Length: 210
Image 1: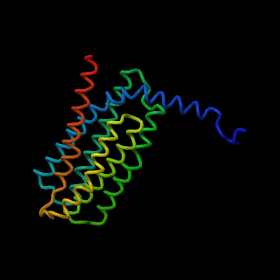
Image 2: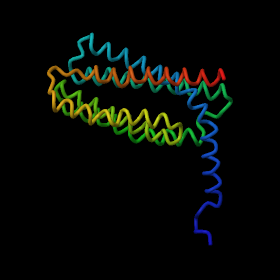
Image 3: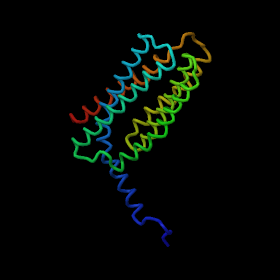
Image 4: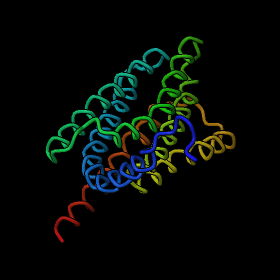
């Protein structure tokens, strides 16, 4: 007997969504390479600005990286939309909404963590803890989205997640002076994104060549 209020097409709709996700995994992967390259370029430039210019206060650090994130989000949106139009696919489709819903909780948690830390008026050295929290939340977001995009994104997310406790252990052992979180942000949100974007671009190009 069918439960009261249950949609009889629920199983069929979910099966169709899974099939659509599998069919569009190639499209997502194709859009992911330029998105990663863009994010990596922005992250590298932001880290260079934070290191070379006087960015020695918590508000300056947050302004720099929140602005970088805003640019990355706008750029990712435009790239994904262009790819969807190019492949004659609807941009805000049910599979895309599932990916967005997977990304949203960890990313919002990272944003609120940064805002809360800014309200505490912490010293500049505390930006290192904020950066580690952002890396962790971002890794969790990638891992969650990887269940709808590709397995590679999950592994990429694991790099961010596992790097946080490793970095904390290193800091406890070495206890270095004059920590600058911009180096950490530049490596994870700059260099790693550039490397992963280049990998996606080269492997996708190789598949198309065959």
